[in-house]
Image 1 (cartoon, rainbow, N blue to C red):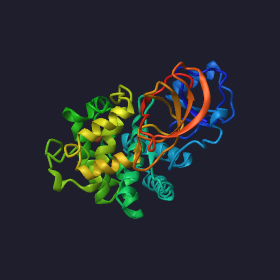
Image 2: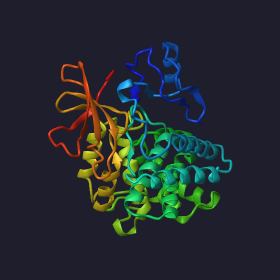
Image 3: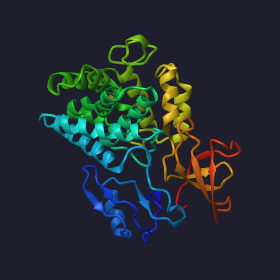
Image 4: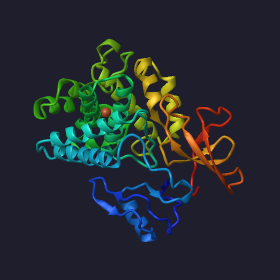
Length: 353
Ligand SMILES: [Fe+2]
């Protein structure tokens, strides 16, 4: 199976996996043949990509580390927490803990502990929150944190921007983008999230610090306090890098819509400024800019699909080449990019593979 963006998808394509909305409700079942009206409906629900059956990729099971069920739980729980915060009702913290525990167990069970994160559209706040938690968990496993600490880290990732839901409506709207949340009154989301987590949700101090400090930077250029390296919690440093990456790859209006490979290069350049070098290094080993199933273009102008992620070589996965430089289908061949430095991914491939 293969990930395909809705734009450019043929109406007769067959779904390889069910499609869910952000509350976890099934919109279309696996096996359904897509029709033009279904595609319109999916767009209305903010779905930007779907899994399509492809005989050339029948052995590609779908995803890496984190199971679909855990992913759906994390996104729908984040949506429920933000909704509760906006309506000043009690936050569903037990559900949030459970969703994160399941994701942590998934990543721990995968010896490669790599997660693939790449936005193909604007990332809704609950999706961004879930992405940040998954990236943080993978980095935590790489940094050899124990299960309890990983759950705390994952929860801090999921709830780092809780304060945005607590801003006055105008400021909340401005804070909906990665740039907007760093300006003016929107900066208060760090303090508001911290207070809500400590006073109402009775979250651990570490989770609350993740909300308070995720915009602090080691050189003192961050907010709300301008803390320097030694004063920023380890959890907040990891969340900061994951949050930054999520903002770089998400399409506007949330983020900058960078090609994921370019986003990774930007992070690598900013080690020490965004977070201490070992945190960035761990991030780059376990967060894959091109996830399993993603159609990619190689520098040979061949089209391929990512079929397996590799720890330590997150940007150089195993790919299956499906089409030559002329765009015509070729006999599929697998290439382990970590072993073959004559080829590299230059970006996502648009349209049909
Ligand atoms: Fe934030």
